[in-house]
Image (tube, rainbow, N blue to C red; front, side, top):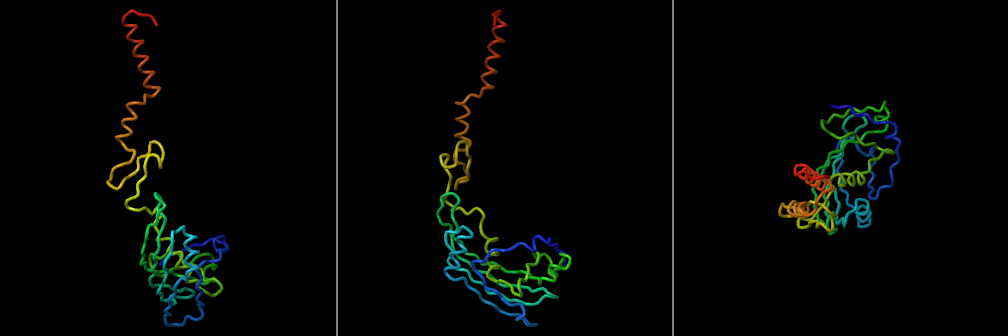
Length: 218
């Protein structure tokens, strides 16, 4: 069991209206667990795709179980399924994804969060509890955030590569064969043809030293 501290600023920070909202009233939750299935509608998926910079979000469903886990705490467990496509960071083409994610979240009532800002969580290794706002848990927004964390931060098609022209001079970018585009071979040729000012200065000094040894003047 670990202690979580939430600042007053974090508790008071307003949240924007969620694109996918499925509030569950906590007072409906008795001693027995409750099973809930939710699915995002086309308009909600389009709004989430815009929020997460997705090429598309074709489906988003969750099969969840809710249960009480102590005074003021509620556990949400189950699975989240999502299909869609992200945007390739190289070619800007769609990168398909199909996710099957475990869900394991804890929510706490406002008194628990405000009681000195400290919460005791019984399940080892869990994330800090999210607040139960106005007596409800927004399962839709919780699933949207779960999807956001699971998305690839740098989606890229396997065959997508960056050329020197696209990435800029001197770039060394990994290709599909493990080599580089604009890599060592090409850079080596540039080094042979481009003479730095310091190398030119050293050459001038060497010629002056040779003239002194031959009795010449500088």
